[in-house]
Length: 173
Image (cartoon, rainbow, N blue to C red; front, top):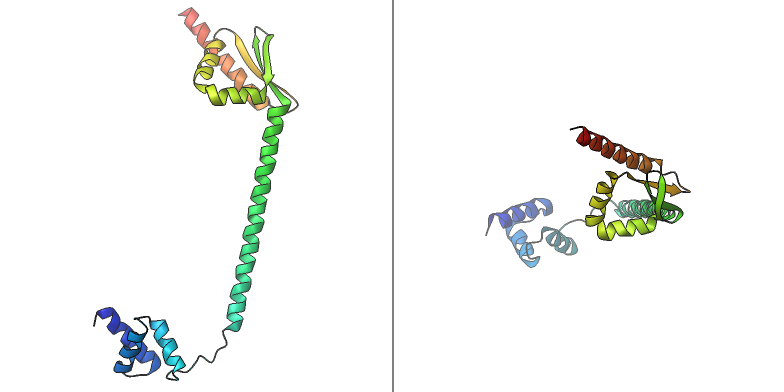
């Protein structure tokens, strides 16, 4: 008999107040499962059933599980709603605004932001270097439209200023 089985026999013997032989036999019947052995002994009248009614604990546990599920569902719905609202905002910005290309203050080209986003998504490797190089030839970029895209425009202005500074440093060197 291995050490684990001996420990189980000892535990069962103490809990059920039975002999070692009985404990070993019941554990063998229960395939070494201590809980199953206790249930077998209980059915045979060797062990008294607990006097405490477990129903209130089960009901309380079930109620708390349902509360948790309800909270989780509400949290998921809130996340879904937040994602949907964010997607709507993004779609509106893409739809209601334009990306403009200027040279020396004159508008050269204008396209919807959604088209610019698609071009960047699929052709970012050549487009971004071309846009950066164009900054050195007095090309500037801006976003126009219904939405306040001043943050993006400040970034574009800053990039243009940096290109101007680098050009002037190169010319003076």
